[in-house]
Length: 324
Image (cartoon, rainbow, N blue to C red; front, side, top):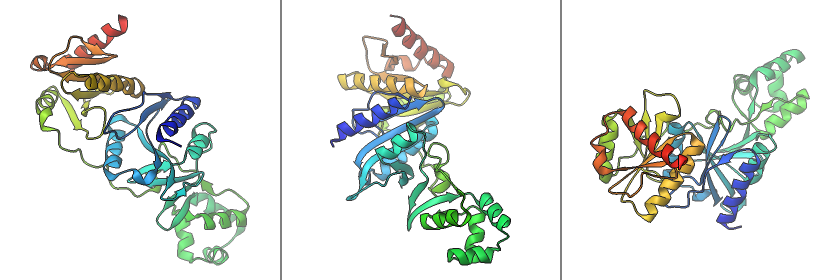
């Protein structure tokens, strides 16, 4: 299957699952292919045939974007090396959860979350330690008795009850012994970090020197500017004084070319899904906005006094286009 067909299939699956899906980020470089929202859940999805092609730089960027946009970065792929990704198993690549399209379908469409995750050494599941302890107490088994049944140490059983995860084989043995479900699913959207000991969110990269003036103006206006390296926008800017959708602005900067117009349209599409505003700073433009992304000429930068002023400019230009 071509990558284009795979992206189309995954996008259609997300739409079938009730997600609003952004336009595909058909530009390079790109850290994710689509943004999708269902209710309060926003996901940034990268789609690859081979998940081993997912680079550390892309993983770092997606995790940073997840933090800025309050989103979950996800990787959907068919295989790793020469093996297909196993069904209903969550893998991790550079701190980003990864799984197959079938697993994604089961989770998003059928509402059946994966139970298993891959980590060095094999496949593991989450054990409900409190439930395990209750079941053992009901049987009046000691830690040593259960350890003997499982072929592990007493200390290992104690760790299971304290919340340590177990191999698939141990989990199956436990559920067979107690004739009860003792596992809990991998919470892909909220708690994937709980089963993956990932590094802290990577620090922001340095801003492009060509964007220094824009960064200076946004910073002076009260925004925290987070540069990006592999996204349709140059930065994500946060207004710390706001806690609604207008506290995040996707920002771009370049000459107003055909490529810039395409980027601005993609930014608008992502913004509609992610509930953010977007602005593109240009040298000169013969219009005020592109599909909801406000265009601001370089000469206007000096007139921007604060975050509220910038928000007004973005809102007015986007609203005028929508009313046209």
